Image 1 (cartoon, rainbow, N blue to C red):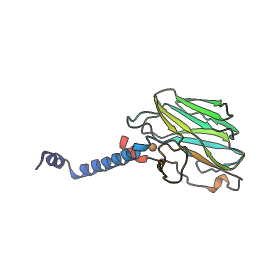
Image 2 (tube, protein in one colour):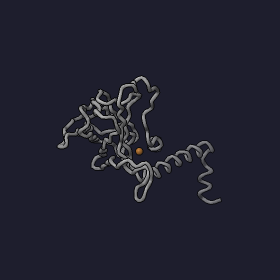
Image 3 (cartoon, rainbow, N blue to C red):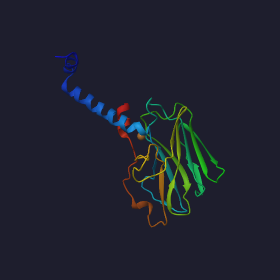
Image 4 (tube, rainbow, N blue to C red):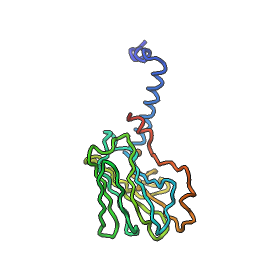
Length: 206
Ligand SMILES: [Cu+2]
């Protein structure tokens, strides 16, 4: 019997199973983390975005920055000039400010007043908006800072790997669909679940 085997056999079978599941989760997340170290996602929580109407766009940060399990301390969301209004809603533990950009767009910045959003915690950052007048799909480039570490979620959308372009993108830009009319009424969608791109990363960190 090798020393490694004797060490393994000292653990009860159930404990060994738990540790191997945890190891698997860690390996899966490690693989997922090679290209993208975290994600910035968008949620509409069951409502449709309708052109020229008011609504809420929620930026969800599913986890902090790998590989050091760093907390998120600042988030910057950019909306283009087509957006008619944008106002960050209050988030406990964060201050927010909205600026106009030179191109007529909007830049919303949340800054943590304390330690920020812990690595393994998902956080919502809602913005009250008036959606663009034209239906379409809109990019919302997002900068996620963990201290001085920056994750710039702004890689363009591509439907497939091609040439030097990987799929999915390393740092995919969050996107939202704006519908032409309110025939997509807000009550038409039920039971929407928030998007969590890498729930395994959260579990592995606990
Ligand atoms: Cu992620």
